[in-house]
Image (cartoon, rainbow, N blue to C red):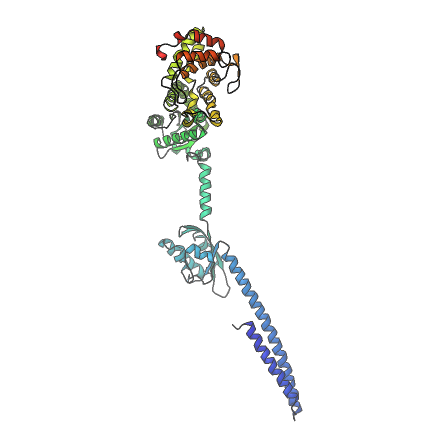
Length: 542
């Protein structure tokens, strides 16, 4: 195809020749005037034809340039559309014009490649089927048959580690050969996002177990007669609140994950394990009778004993119920299982509380830089001291004092070792952290149902003159048991080596208590302790 500039040059040359011919003819003496007239008319017509042809070529050139511009714009649009566009004919060979996205999808240039080789390179059976369907489409002349063949073509294919959506467009060119257009869209990220969203919709983010939404989705199928007998086990964690209060929610989350692992290692592959709520799990057991459900419960308990934890014991209460008849609803089944779980929890609670206290005391003795025997000395001295103040042995108040003496410094298990073991004075920030142990001890006592003891633990560092912490209580606002244990605790701390201070003699410690009577300590209780110190401080407290 000649360029517009070359065409214009030809017309300019022709016009110049024509002008010269006209000028030359005017200078000649034609004998035949009729011939001269005809020749002049011919020149005029030729000039008009030449100018018209020039105009036509200019229009054609302009249209060609516009067409090329539009073709470039369309190609640019297709190349930047994040979709692959290609066409092929009856021979199934890809035409030379296709979008850049096709190269990214197929990993190569694709002109004259067989379309079935590109789409199904490693699936021979599918490749043969596609070739048969596409060939039949080009040979068919009935739209209904073509649409039927189109509907049988695959809509999504896995190509070079990418999930690709395939759309087929039939392009009828009338008398010319028919063309098939294929539009390819890489939907890998979209499908992965969809799969992730679906996973998050039906799984608990912390434990990766199924969640409540999933259980509610599959329940209609699980309640079918084919799954009878159907058993349900309700699992409720013990001690989660205590773990959160003492060690923080990060440790509590770890405990939840450990329970999930316990259930996963105990259940069968056909069982559905779900996190039903914060500290509650459901086990859905299709085709499982009462005996089999109870065997699973026993297995969970046994496996729990053997599961190691870094601080808090794994403990769960379980209750099961079995559906034998189709008429029983899931709500009724759940109600029975929960009632049995709470009954077991109530029966096991005292034993669990005792194990909690034993474990916490063990942690306190081994991790918190407290002098050996401190807890036992404070307990013995506090009970003797209480008897001298008129508290009757075996009374409710006496039992409360006993528990307070055992729990008085339990909150220190939440304080970092770096602060508890620091030999020099604490900074202001460190002292604020240290003072928080009273509130942690309060929550521990609350978690085992001892409200009065919890208030006394919280008040152990209040002072008689109202300058203590955490609330600045004074005098009788401070519980009696807290005032009593505070004196005993201070005496034992002073008379035994601490990481931050050497011990004092008994006499020096008693002098310090006398000096602080009326400011830090209850003056009346301080006087009784000093006067009866020989009786209170026995060989068991040495």
